[in-house]
Length: 494
Image (cartoon, rainbow, N blue to C red; front, side):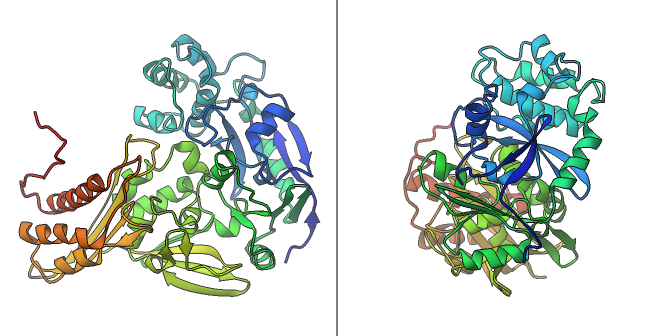
């Protein structure tokens, strides 16, 4: 139960303390910045977290360390900003008012033309400049995945980022660094452990004090929308015009951000962001590295959470297929009661999960991967970076001492109404030798497991053929046999 109670949120906006109450649950940071504070440097492009024109930095305390992350203001709700430092592009210059190292490099290397996307690019690169003093070109490209530029192309922008990295952030050349100590003291003071309740004529916004308070609050308001990173709920508002009140924010709850990695496996709290999970997850499952870097852009990975991706139940979510293949389980909580279910059983039907009223995802556990296990995950999308999957495939297999398939777990997203295992294909593998003929039988069995739909991301035929060929890819990567992969009829080989 909350120890104290507040009826307002408080945060830093650039160099000012802000206290807000009475705002609507669906008020976005972008609208508030532009319409209320008239900080119009931050732009609205897509209003769905896809183009990066709205990028700002949000600083937060993490185990005593002040971290600044790029986020999409267009889908970030104001209610989630308690005890943070919001930094708009207007504040990203030097203490003396001169251009920052990033801004000056963008000028010197002609990184801006029309300028609409430039404020978001500057914010993203400024966040990288603060966190990584010697970024590689790959690091820079990764930081810019969520920023779309249609004028200059990216070469001059990357050159500007490289040039900016030659200057080390210091109290003399960066306002954020100069105020680092004061900001830590201020944000620490803001985080008073109180439950926050904001009432408005559009409904209520709640910020529970901790996970126990969340359990109490959600049990009392099971109709509420739980918001972790808002990378999906934000679109409910900006694109579907849905009412989401009452809202319970959980992105600030430290006890839902716990990460534990040991010999048994990896446990992630429901509030762990993709960015925060990266180090431990890739350490335990290095095969996940490429997929993880292709989940949204940097802004989405900084906001979105693994628990939210699971709880949302989307059939094209990127995390459920590999987690199902890895035999992950999810812990659900209602009040003081908890139950743990296999992740594959959590998804019942399209839009329906095994979650009771007032019950929320508390954590996910992923068992350790043995040294003799074959495991791989693949993502197919229209563009490589920052795109939703047409399909996502994960394969896991073990062989016995005689080279026969001892166990197999195959899961796909985008092939059915839920993330789903390929039971027939698994059965075709188990007990059989790891050979081309066996793979062909399992490949054919996928047509029994799935009847995919056609939509604007991919046709049913494309999805099925891609799924079958990914099974061949998995086989080739584990045995190296030179086998020709069947191609889609519309594909012409040179």
